[in-house]
Length: 590
Image (cartoon, rainbow, N blue to C red; front, side):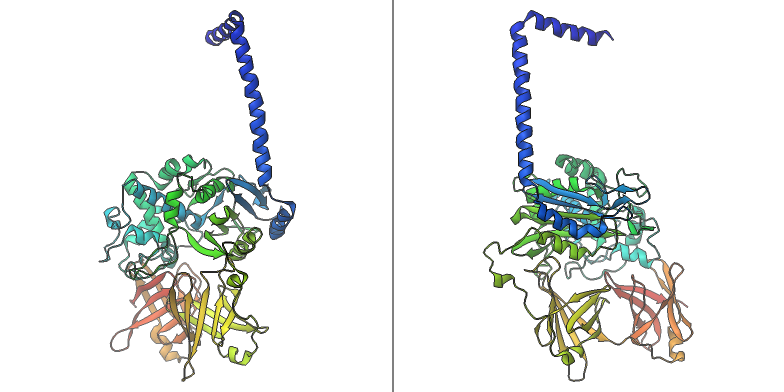
């Protein structure tokens, strides 16, 4: 109690004894006060100069007016220009039950937007000499099965490892959206794998497993969890104080938005596995990362430049995808971006360094068309023909109106790729559409049997999807699907999924099928002359046929099955060939 009083008394005595010192101190505080006012004035003036005009603000509001409700979920938007977050606004409710609105402080699940931070952590360790991109992952993760092929850290980051996606594996094994997924669950299921989708470096195929394993490598090298390492090495240096990897699914997070599929239905991500996902942040914090991404003077900038370099296959062909970052062209500007979607949370971050801009969109409602929003929002800011582009260079090619509908209708129908993904082509109001996941994409025609879907983020597109139909003399039609940006292609065959087999033949498919790599079983049963795929965790799914060896069902995780037979033609199992899972074997055991 005495020390503070003594100190205060001493200061008063010193001032009384030294008038000149007292005057000097007064003068010092006067100038400090004036300088503070001036700095504040110029800071406010600079911020004011960076704010958006009322017309643009109204246009942004119009994009999200349907979500600006106090009875449902919504979103937040952030706009970065130069070195400032010039505009941000929340729409709708972070918590519908308690009527808590979304603000710039609201925390959102980032889903796959998390991958760029995991990639940065790996590249930072490489810069520090603690690992190399061409290191075999078994050097750090000896528990990963030996597939007889070298898998490098670069393979993980560029989605060229061939390792199956753990989300789809868990779903096939019976893990539902309501179940808890821990780090140990993912390690266990990956450690049981015996085969790859393809040899490392031979193909590009998006896989969450690669980024989970990258996060585990960070743990192995540093002795810290991905959360601990990024907290100290990434987030704190950038002042991202409300950002972290959530490695405990039950963790309480202040100001977090609850995700809603519908107003009356919550969708919580019950996962503790991080690396591919798991980041929590808000638009204020993410703006600091975005500013560093576009600022050549940032200490993080050199690594971020490495992240946007395209991966390469063993052939030397570029994939057109960086590490945790995808890329395209948007009206003459190079755009770097990534989408994220988990449960009802949908997000994207788009960087346009050439325009010194970044755009952020985080939502807690599952009914947004993420691709449309990611297209419409930057169009409010990026206009004209920059970088010497002419109008002809960015004009859409082809026609949207089909005049010879008879010829085009011959191409309509359902098609399937080698990875089991189906696409429907249809004619409607003299326009040709490709239907993916229930969404119609308008096709533009460049030749009689050639069409394309413009890329989802702009007009001057490097990642557009192209379809070249071939009519064969026997009446069959095939399609070659290509992506302009990453130089990859797939063959599509036309299917006529009809169950035409007799009951006796249908019975040869019935039985129990077991997968060693997942330790799970499915059964094919015959009910009312209809084959169905059954499992303890899922509703029965009707089976239809393309042919006797290719079966379809309604389960999202294993939509396409390939029947395997012995030399005598007897059915001995099936393989799942769908999306991120290829050649996953189920043996017929009963």
